[in-house]
Amino acid sequence: MTLFETIRDHLDSLVHPSARQDAMTWARHRAFIAPRMVGCLVALASLPLYLAVRGAPAEVEVMILAWLITPIVVSYYLSRTGRFESAHVLSSLALAAVVFAISINTGGISSFAAIWLVAVPLEAALSASRRVVAFAVVLALGCALTLVMCEALGALPPSGVAANVSPLFEALGIATATIYAASLAFGAESLARTSKHLLDTEEDRYRLLARNISDVIARHSRNGAVSFISPAAEALLGIPSARLLGHGLFDRVHVADRPAYLKALSDAARGHESASVEFRLKRDHPSDFLWIEMRCRPIEIPAASGADHDTEVVSVMRDVTERKAQEHALESARLAAEQADASKSRFLATMSHELRTPLNAIIGFSEMIAREEEMMLDAARRKEYATLINESGLHLLSVVNGILDISKMESGNFEILPEPFAPRDALVSCSNLMVLKARENGIDLTTRAPGDLPQMIGDPRAFKQILLNLISNAIKFTERGGAVTVTAAVDGSRLMLRVIDTGVGISADDIKRLGEPFFQAGKTYQRRHEGTGLGLSIVKSLAELHGGEMTILSRIDEGTTVCVALPLTYSPADPKPSSNVATLSLAPRAEAKDHQVKKRA
Image (cartoon, rainbow, N blue to C red; front, side, top):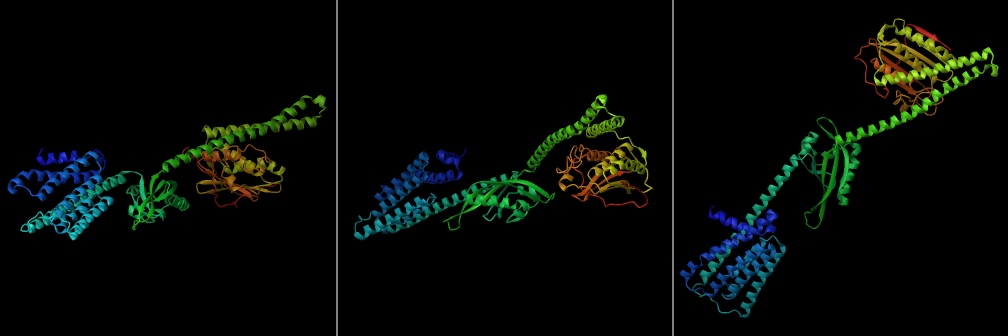
């Protein structure tokens, strides 16, 4: 280890431990101790040589040599206590005292040493403390004024410098004062370079942190304009950070979320409290919206005048799109659970009614037939009761079959048995089966199907069940005097079945849920029309099992049109996944003109 390194390490060890926590404070302490210790030790080391050449020192020289010990004592004081301002005050006092004492004994304000009073506030400037500088200025001026007054009043002692060497001492005083001032200037410059290096290092550290952190850090003025935004914004939004400065970030906030975004910034700026907000932010690649959580906190910036403070806002933005998606999924699951619970309650209510009604009829009328002698029933009455028992049993069987069918479809156990069949014959047959029910309700049932409808491959049993459910539903919800029209037509590779009625219609909100098991549209007329709510659900499921779809168009009090599109050729790969929402679109209504089969009540 070299001598220079040894001296440097020793000087570093003299810095008080309290100053080692901050790099700039450490540099100031070291800049105070190092030149005083080294300079004084060098001067003291050269003292024997000076005395050998000079001989016995004069009174002035003794004062100077005594002062050389003072910086060492002050440096030791700083090293032991860490009181930087106090050390500067002591150093200023020591320098001013020796300059004043030399000046008093060498001619007062005209002394060669008086010029050194300028060095007192210059040295204090290195403390970076206004109080120390002010003290040093007052001290130097006080010494100067005292010297002036002493000289004016003739209170100065005789000068200890001979007249023939006075110019030499004056030149020496100016030179040494200049050298000392230069050393102070170099020390100030060294501290400035150290400060800039530390600032650059700190800035590089924060820039490195800003570049590598996934959260976006931004700085906003009072009006919300962005003055700084971290590079993470480019990775998040897919655009250069420079395009987000000013109001570029605000322009990308979703229009519906802008009031909340501005309010959070305003609250943070005015309330001097942290605020948080969630909003959607548009990105370029891919072009969609992200959910962003922004936490903002106010910071006070000194104004240019130094009198007041301006408040800005620092925000930290984080991508919470995944969390919002999970929240949405949880909310959807909660709604699905609530709907399942409501469906269970609706199922129990519906089934209790639908099963109890025919069972009561079966039990009641069978008991009356069993007691025919007691009830004195004639043959006509027995036949009527038997017919009612049979109808109730058939109704009960249809309810059970519907429940079993929808259960099979939802579990994926409903088997489609495809075979070639004529859809027109099946349509006419189903209409003939329903014409009696339409006549009893006072409704016109009309069937329109072209005679050249091609054969299709599918499950004829399921095809008929679709038609019977649709026609039965249309008749059920059409008032007396209304009409139900059934049409069939080919559209490309699909068969389009339409059942059009002039009934009560369906609201837009109910259309969205039609096709759900056990759901009946319209609370006002729900129980006025008997049924389990399984009809359209079965139709929708059967259509999707065939690779087709069901669409509904309806208006309240104007009627309903249900369209089922089925592929002419069934393929096991065609079926679509079942959903609980019926499609709202409807193809244009087409009526075949080639052949009409009309049944009127």
